[in-house]
Length: 193
Image 1 (spheres, rainbow, N blue to C red):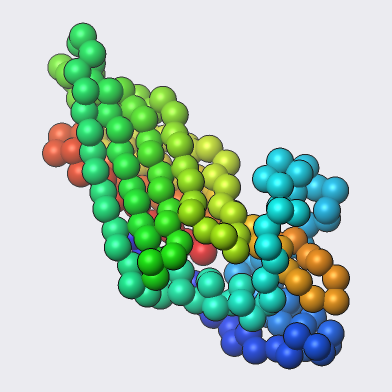
Image 2 (image 1 turned 30 degrees about the horizontal axis):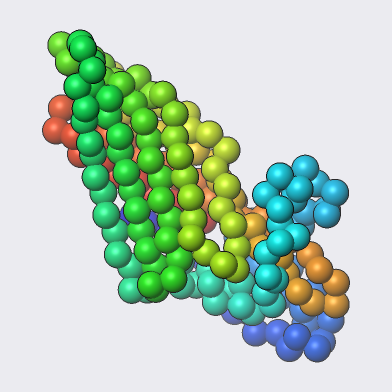
């Protein structure tokens, strides 16, 4: 699993609103972060007001750890269960970064035993983090006609509650891309932040 990030130094004094604004600006230019109004539906849906809130510097440190995969543990698992003429296939990707942030994705598919043609059914995703939340907005699914591999892509975002002079909610886009080879049951995922 790979995060591709460009990082701008985030070292503002929490007491200096001008430096805080400049840091938020650099966070926006580095990560494509955007501010969300508290009335935004996603704020309500994800209960962002319940996040504990972090400083811009803390958000930058968290993103840096995710970017660098410090003390990262990755696990991939493909499970098949026979159901008549097809197999139910579950692809499970799990990564824990720094013994603190755990990201999990499960893709549920169906594979025809005779043709190896795979159909996407659904997904589950979760993140065990206290300082932010992660939301995936569905997966697109395609088959490479040359190799027979299945390709997945999903837009997702990390959401932070930033504490400063005012409370601000920010969204940082993360693109998830992955492949699954039904012939040898191998899966791989990449994250682009």
